[in-house]
Every structure is written in structure tokens, then in C-alpha cells.
Length: 158
Image 1 (cartoon, rainbow, N blue to C red):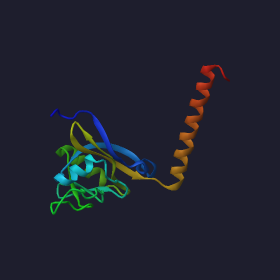
Image 2: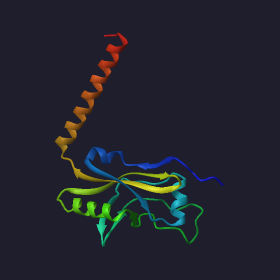
Image 3: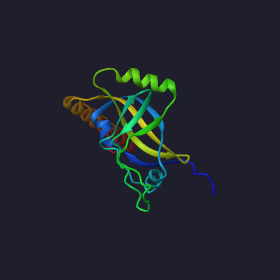
Image 4: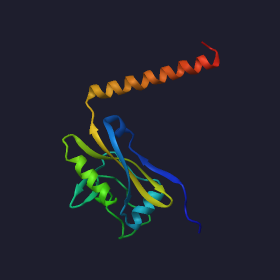
């Protein structure tokens, strides 16, 4: 059987980019059991309440929901168990230093398969206040409007 190549998205946390301002992004591998991988291959996972934290020299992913595999038996996994992330030592040290600040957290952005391996994209993020969220929306809409006007002018409609 040929080895899988490319990137296949499983789950994405769109609300994280709205609720947090992203500072650094890291790609990490996951330590998973067999039934977790089979469930992920079916495209079933949720990152909504998930977060990561530094503990005893490692980064752990918590509250990620990977449902039980339907064809699994007594070997099935617990859906919301803590999962260890695979990162290099220098990345772990940088993440540890960054999360010591107040208001900084580790948020999973997406979960995907890359060349057959399960990966998660985590971000060092700082929480936004409600007025920051409104400002981000206003900036995004202004940018869209200018792009729309530039496009209309290029087509000769304006």
C-alpha cells in the first residue's frame, strides 16, 4: 500500500483566531492510541474547549474530544483524555517561557494528517477583550471593502 502524502484537515478551531491574538504557531505530533487514529481517519474530532499546558517538561493537550471508535472493543480510548504533544526541546522551552506571562495560553488551532501522521497546530495566544474583537472585525471589513473597490475599478465598473 502506498504511503499517504499531503495534508488532510480533520478539525479546525475558527473561534480561537477571533477570541485570541495569535503570537507564535507551532506544529506538533500527537501520542495517540490505535482507536484514536481510526476515529480521526473518519474525520471525527472537536477542538472547541481544548487547550494545551506545560507540565513536567512536556506539553499536554487537554479537553480535545476524539469520539470513541464505533468498531472498537474494550480497547477503546477515553474521548477527552490528556494527550502528549511531540515537540523539540527548544520549542518546549520557548513555549514554557511564553506561557509564564499573565493572560497567555496555548490554544489548538487545527488538527490534521500530514504525510500520514496526526499533527496539531498550537498557538501561543493572548486573550482579546471585547473591544479588541470589535476593532478586529472593523479592520477586516474595511480591508474587504477596499479590495472590493479596487476590483471594481480594475474591471472598469466604477
